[in-house]
Image 1 (cartoon, rainbow, N blue to C red):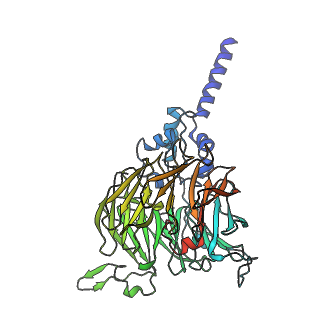
Image 2 (cartoon, helix red, strand yellow):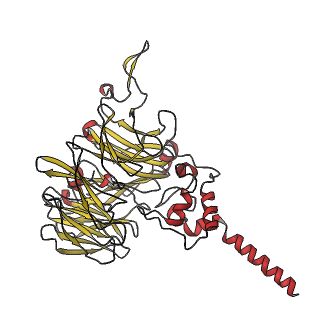
Image 3 (cartoon, one colour):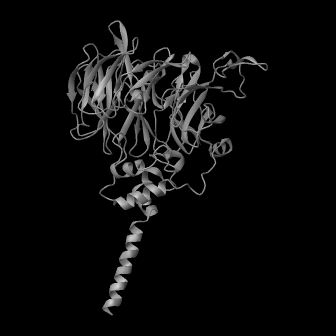
Length: 515
């Protein structure tokens, strides 16, 4: 009897061990909240071979074990054994039985326009329409609409799950478009304080960009490998581009940006060493760069493309994940994936024209510019280095490297402010906000408004008189500072507030705001 009982216990323990080692169960417990139960992505990206293809070998295991210091991805070394980590990594690299198709038909089928929405002739509130600020609250997936003068909350509306990338305003500042990681795009009327509608433009998406004329919205997708272009009027599909490099290699779209003077969108690609320029010009026949040039017996000159949005593919010396444009939008600064340097591409000639000293993985998307003496400088934080790089945009040389108390994520300023605000998003000093003098390029004050809390992302009011800072916690708040005295004048309780976006600063491309 004792022997039988021992065998039963051993078998039970064996089955328990097998259950514990089941990678599907581990996925549900540790991964599904952020990456969704179907592995197609939520707050985090999709975890399938198509999106993990550049993380070969042990890299997936290392991320599961150690997390990623430049993201919200934690490590699970204390929860999972090495064996379970290896099995979970193998499971993530196993193809799904089927990835749902997501083209124009499926996108249009997802589109819902609110029946109770009615347009208005003027704002239903009395605030300055150009001084409205949106505060994204990721704790419960809402956005608060703030009066930029009184900081009163005019409305608080629900967003799609896991908003990602900055909301985009139309050129008049009336409508705003918000995107989630699972591909939903929401249109909201700020004047009416009403949602207009939603559409799912992709299954796993990165960000959106508004065309300079306000007619088109480009959606960068990880899954499928597409660029979706929507009409801003009714969220209908204008076009879906399959994204493949010159050699036919499919690629995820890391990000999409607008270049208004060029009447184009510019794409950063994840899986091929190229950047794309997609034209939305009203006169594509005059847009010679769009289709390239040909010289043979069939055609002499621009190559026609059978599309409303012709594409120009520019080969780059390295994979570039992050961009920053100069004021003319002729030059694009790109960050090398190696995290050791960067480069400058001239979009007119489609060639690299300069190298950049940018060790430490710069976050160029958060870069800002200001006038410094006789030149314009650009400053960027670094995701893996406790420094801020200041670069002369005339010579592309580093003017100064400013030591900080840890790697940062966001920077902000305003033309009417003498200061730059820079957070320390990563590491033990995440509660620090550095204040940098624009003229001396020195840190003049390091504030700890809420010790121990993550303090990040600054946005200014229209006139630059006040700065809004997020206390990035579930029971967080937005701190309103007098931008001159650096004193807190108001506290707005919010659920894990992240980015804030002022209408005027965004639609005018204010120099202290990232674009």
